[in-house]
Image (cartoon, rainbow, N blue to C red; front, side):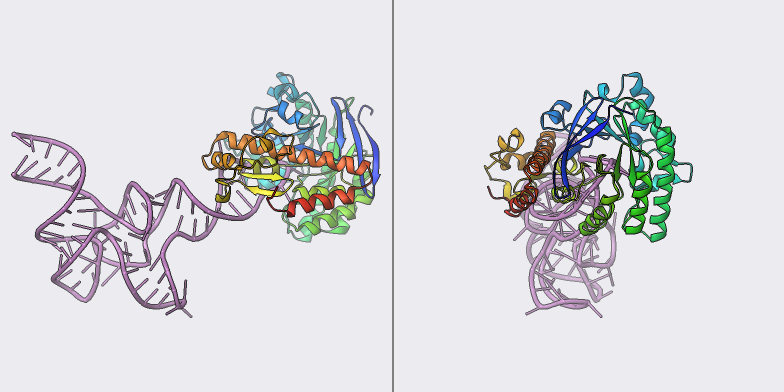
Amino acid sequence: MTGFSLKIGAVDGAARTGVITTGRGEIRTPAFMPVGTAATVKAMYAGQVRELGADIVLGNVYHLMLRPGAERVAELGGLHKFMNWPHPILTDSGGFQVMSLAKLRKLDEKGVTFQSHIDGSKHVLTPERSMEIQALLGSDIQMQFDECIRLPASREDQERAMRLSLRWAERSRKAFQEREGRAVFGIVQGGDDRPLRVESAKALADMDFHGLAVGGLAVGEPQDVMLAMIETVEPHLPASKPRYLMGVGTPDDILQSVARGIDMFDCVMPTRAGRHGLAYTRFGRVNLRNARHAADPRPLDPESTCPAARDYSRAYLHHLVKSGEILAMMLLTWNNLAYYQDMMAGARKAIAERRYADYVAQCKDGWTQGEGA
RNA sequence: GGGGGAAUGUCCCGAGCGGCAAAGGGGGCGGACUGUAAAUCCGCUGGCUAAGCCUUCGUAGGUUCGAGUCCUACUUCCCCCA
């Protein structure tokens, strides 16, 4: 299959820059992909997300299958047109919901039966159906259907979920409809068990996926365990293909993972935290709910290119947050995504200039400065 | 002038009808958030020499082993009739 490829640019240690080419455009890596679960990056216009530097966003099989329905989206011309985002879209298979909605589903070899969190109706998701839905949505990067489990978990559960995910990987790969410029990624599982992780990665590497993801991390384990798992798995992930760390993470998680060879990230952190009153800045996290900002005339970051960070006082943002105003969520989400994208742009530049370690040190330095500036 | 009703924790609303440091909310203060059931969730919000003690329910008395709860008077506010 052609039309989907990764071209490696610079390498600095295990960190690397590159460009992923898809049928709908290029993705500069390391990349942060804003999460747009329900066909919207919450509180943002698609155009805004693009302007911040995002090359790709996520959509979600489970949520879009329930509402408005994959067939409906297809009838309307696909997800890109539906949400007015003409650039690449990666769709999650619903594997994360196997964990997050564990109370509302039943799992067996064939797949997962979800009870809709919206109206209680039953919906069966199999690897085949997940691939079909992702195709209907018009996804550029489809994810295999997997079973993501929470940590800590018993070795038995980790092994069982990993093996099931491998079998589902084969079925997903087989069900994927080859299309010019489109890809399907496998997902490494195995919890916090090194041998299981290695086994999973090796098996997936032989399945002819267009890229591989590391899943089932940042699900309850400490950061050092997560990083150890990445280091364990990385040598077994084909260097010529994109490596995607699913659902991660905090700015520090991301920089640390880039240093260990990861190319792609997604996380709800910047969007959700933004809606909850938390701003990410070069100077660390700023909880705008805190009373100490009530009379602070300073913007979050006077030197940011993002108006949300530059043109509004912390006092005003505090007021908006305390008042429950919609604009608070819009501005803080905007600020956070801007920070994440700027951080990624900085990482790409630093790797290209072979000074990534310095860049990370510099970022960490800024975060610990507190909220100065 | 006559009749009826209400006053609750030092921010507000408000449950309570003999065992109460006193339900709930709001507000306030703080925390969490990692492939989004999230504009959500979780703490704290009388004092202390703390598994106990002290001071609180308009004010002052009284009944009772025990009173936010019952009785009397007073104060303030509200409603109805003149």
